[in-house]
Length: 182
Image (tube, rainbow, N blue to C red; front, side, top):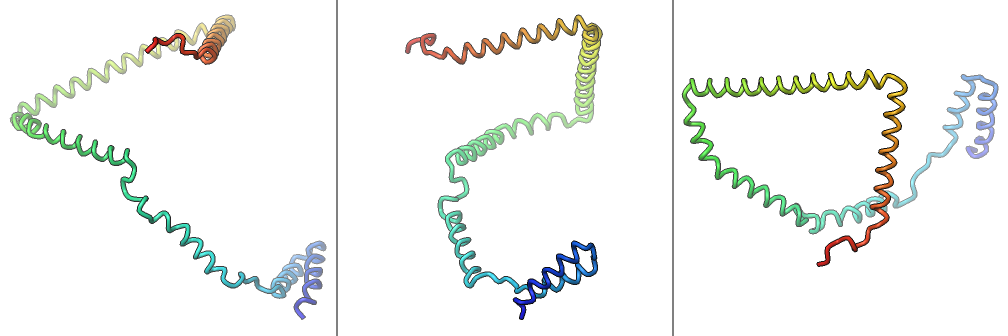
């Protein structure tokens, strides 16, 4: 019975959609969906999928996936331990230097010296920035005129061509005749 109703309900749904009758089309679509048989996976599908997943996951858990299996990982770990041990050698000297500066006046003096040096560094950086802005504005004014801009573009093109030809020469002639004999 269901198989004979499929084409009729499908045609009724398509005709309702074509005519623009939304409520009739929705009702016909619901009837089409009720007439269709539910699809089920073939027997044993889940078992085959799980068996394949286990087979693919098994090599990843093998002995070759150990922590620090690569030689470079073990070398990096050893180097970090050596650096930490070397740093520990300097710990007593650093603690002794800090213990000598326990006086409040020495701490205040060291802090003031640090802030003074930091202030001078920031001022010099700002002075350099100011000079760079001045240089940029001095270059921007002539480059705004068309003749100077054309000249700058021509110079840039010549230098780009020279760099390209030099690179091509170096890439093309890579013989060992220029190297010292061993």
